Image 1 (cartoon, rainbow, N blue to C red):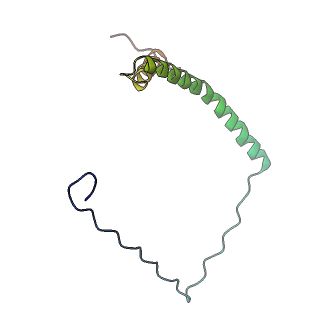
Image 2 (image 1 turned 90 degrees about the vertical axis):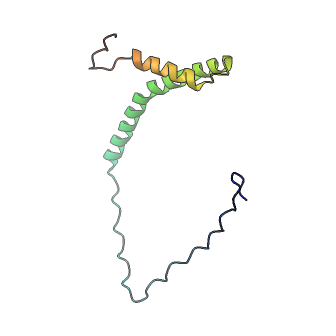
Image 3 (image 1 turned 135 degrees about the vertical axis):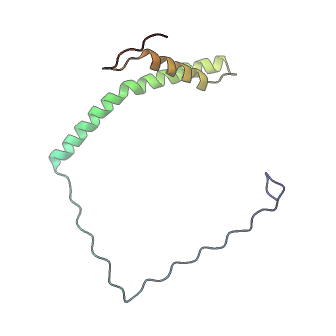
Length: 109
C-alpha cells in the first residue's frame, strides 16, 4: 500500500536495457574543430559591459533587500499574515508610485 492511497503500490520498474553496441564497420566520427579564443580587446569590453550591468542592477537589488527586511519585521509582529503579504503590498505600492521614464503618469480614477 502507498502512504496516500489505499491501493497497491505500482510494480517496481524494470531495469534499463543497455544500448546496442557500436557498429565496428561504421566510419569514425569526424574530428572536432579547434575552438576560437576571443581577442584580448573583446574580453576587456565584455568585462566592462558586465560591470556596467552590475551597476545598473545594484539599486534594484538594494531596494528588494530593503522591502524584504521591512516585510520580515512586519511578519514577526503580525505572524498571522507572515512576511509574504506585506512584501507583496509594499512592492505593489512601490510599483504604483514609481513612474517609468518616458511614460506618462497614470490619471487618478
